[in-house]
Image 1 (cartoon, helix red, strand yellow):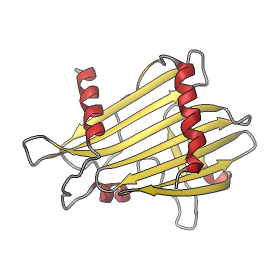
Image 2: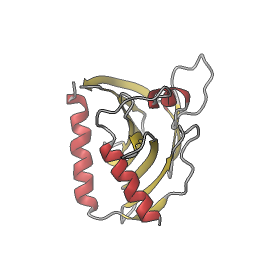
Image 3: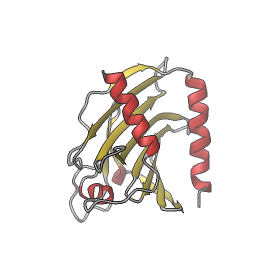
Image 4: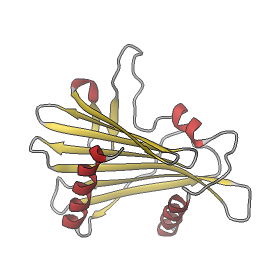
Length: 197
């Protein structure tokens, strides 16, 4: 049953970026109300703590903010931020596509600038065919290149109501198929982040 639910979630995400009529409670409002990656912070603190599965918490306020790149296309707007410390580099990429989808990608690199960990979190909505009902889809994939063999962890959930809590399902972990090919793909995506306009 879980593979069927996972396949359904991926299908819904893949089809969710089409033109759809918005409901009063939009997914953009959900993201503003519930940030799935950020712990509450005092108002005087400008930066945030991100909580990543497998890695745990990373306090970006203890890192130097090296650069920011804003980009956009059609109804999508994104922001890439790069943070560094003595022993690691963290890059956050947040992409918002109107009411249809929000994608957060977190890259963690070692001091030699090798990608060691990638976390992709998605929040999307899709209209159920033949009905006037929206499904909300939350999904997460974690690519962990720190171990040999590299690991892939994933989880997803769907709901008919706007999600108000983070994704709590347990991660399913397996060996990553073709880790060299997947790492090469992530390197290309990472390199292209600062070319986006």
